[in-house]
Image (cartoon, rainbow, N blue to C red; front, side, top):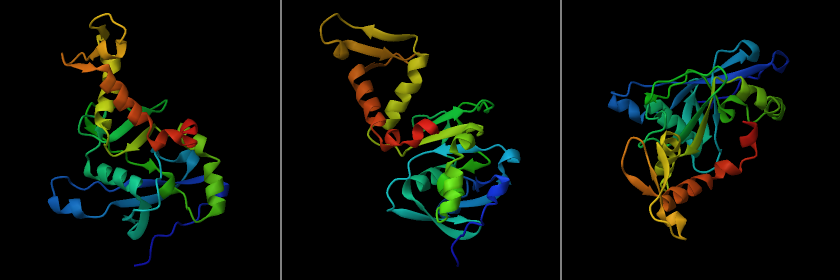
Length: 235
């Protein structure tokens, strides 16, 4: 079968592509082995349906994975594939929970309010690796120049930091618990080794977490390649 080829955008009409991910029924075991399927559709940006924009890192060219785009084979890099696979399986939820990958959601000015722990299931997504023809220098230049507007007009920006590793789930739980803490910091005893004696108490639990563990896990999370991207500030 011939690989997927993007139909050229009419740049004079300010067109963009948006991707729809096919979400299989989670109870059908056989579908878990099926390839990720997406549909790419073209819209005038001024009248396009609401969409979510994905902020992530491309990562190295290898390994790569095959998906199906408009019923044609299409190859993408590993980090995006992991996100799409998790999205298609319904395993990413609002907000990030103990069992979720490292993901954050930032609603736009008119963004939706989702029920807690609801599956992440945007109808349309804007993802540069899918929605821009990477083989067209002209299209890439045109679309990149509109990145600010594309992200500003999104109903929400989804930040995908990658799969869980190095206690990143713990770091995300700490980050989400800090604003909810009724007693953010408790000095157990006054001495000169403050980091070893400061503990965080979450509202929903009496479990105390040593600050060193909190700082170490969050620092490791902040050292991920995502935070070194030039595009982060723009997105």
